[in-house]
Image (tube, rainbow, N blue to C red; front, side, top):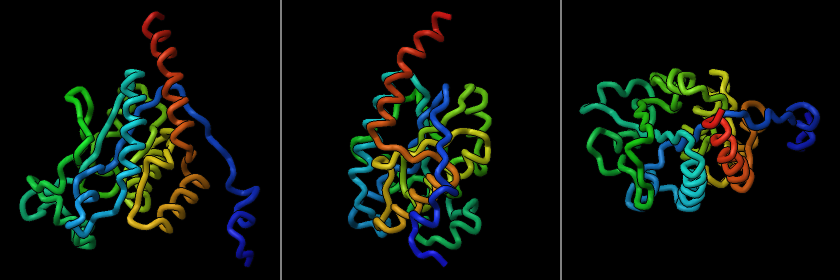
Length: 217
């Protein structure tokens, strides 16, 4: 078996979908648990949050839909299921926990959608797909935590639901660089276009003129 990674994928998984016409931005699980050094979920992902906020600000400037997810379980985790059973750190997301709150620097406006979920994907068990369809969205720009977990799950489901997943490299983070890079590589190969922050910002900036043309049409 060929052990060179790039050679193994060359000519097989190199296609790009490209950006669509009607994007929305998704910020996956940017919550305090990943930023609190005393929490076992701490991941040192401050740079990813800073990048995601820059992308979010560009989406706001273009008047595009902005969506946040968090993980919230009822008291005693009655709705936790197998995911809660398997991943013990999810105990930090029982409703009312400060570790499930938004971290410092991430302001969420009341005209932006918050999707609370119990499983990795932003789509599973939520109304997100129906909402995006109602809004006429064809492209989902994805940022968030963690790359190997809820970002990947949301990316795969976005693809499965017929949306174009655009994953912003710098605006995603994980607790270790190895799973972060491996999952970015795999998402880019099979499900999404993984782009740089600058490429995402350029795309979102271009939406300002397109939004104006749609409004005047």
